[in-house]
Length: 85
Image (cartoon, rainbow, N blue to C red; front, side, top):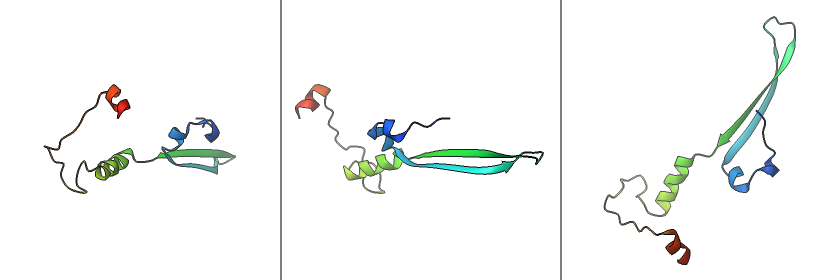
């Protein structure tokens, strides 16, 4: 796997990355005669579900830790109407 340099990644994409870890270690082969380098790279992404829950709480979609109200009014807009608002 090859990683793209950070400078070549769009800012919206890099915002989704929580961390990148790279570990290199020397390991002996099964015969024990030579050592090889093992590289492990990990990319951890931010938790999308947690972010959506926090957004929902912030805009009042549901009470923090409480049930969702089934009769909550929701306004839907067409794209054309949204651009005029």
